Image 1 (cartoon, rainbow, N blue to C red):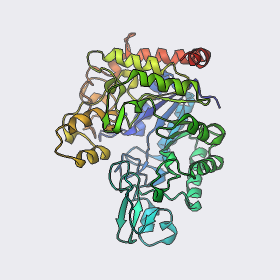
Image 2 (image 1 turned 30 degrees about the horizontal axis):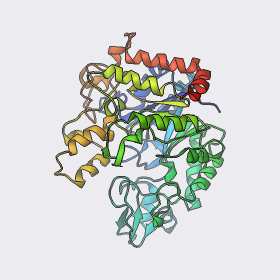
Image 3 (image 1 turned 60 degrees about the vertical axis):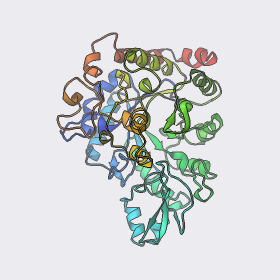
Image 4 (image 1 turned 90 degrees about the horizontal axis):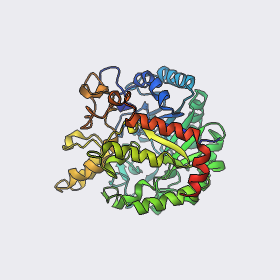
Length: 452
């Protein structure tokens, strides 16, 4: 399965297009834009989680793997989207969270109701250790009904699944095969490298059982059937080769390009270091033998034309520069909604404009810090989650109601309507780069790779 000439377009459904006026994007909105997606020249459309969820972490807290959340639509509409995309030779990639579930999931509800079978679906300890979650809070929460602490490597509303329990694994494999049978063309596997965690050793990612479980997962479900990409932050070339190709995944996100600015933690980051970027490009373009996942932006990152470059005076130049670089790299190109029109960071100036639980957790660590809002404005995940900018009307053509989160500051000038007929626009430049990739794969995968 060769994906080197493929382009994946990520949609954050909540913010793509609302057709009901309730301020939340929906499946009908995506269905209405299938022609737009096809015109871009993409091959896969990846939707961030749309399964039933209480939305404590914007869908990454799944309460039912088999049911599309009514806020987005129905299972029938999802099936319709799969079929409409297939007509345009586009495959739909489903976002699956296999490391944890919502505390509203029936498994956890049965566990805290005293069901011993389902208690073993999760990880419990009599006393917590010093493990800290990704959201900068203790990774253990006490449950009075069970009388023990449960592990959550993210929010307390997202209890981690116990992958050492074969019953958990088989339940997940059954669910994945259900969606394969429904015609899903690929899976993006959220924080998949956490399934091998060893919490007693304070090991969160890529524990000793990770590769074993990953291979079992692949062999039981998607291997040699459909496209997969795993979220595996800061993976090395060796680690990518161990988890990809015949070992499990088609590809894995490593994010080493985006991590070059990081200092002590996610919220402490410097400016772009071009030499470090070149170093990382050399490593992954010249040493990695598999299909690299080439990512600029996604729902967890600030927009690079704001974070690395200049999104005001040199907005168009910055946006075109990024796709000029990432668009000629060897691998599968991943675009995030709005990249193609140069969407930027939101530039919110009030805490009340944010919605992200991770952002609030950071702020609450030191609420009197005068630099908090400036840091959040630069780094918060909500920068990538604002509504798609379709036109210059109120709320950017995203909704006729009130959007669940504010628009970015520049929607009246940066939007699809303003660019679609402008031959020199960012949108049409993206189309040219995508077409160039498809027409010149030999050049991209040999000459440019060898001289990177």
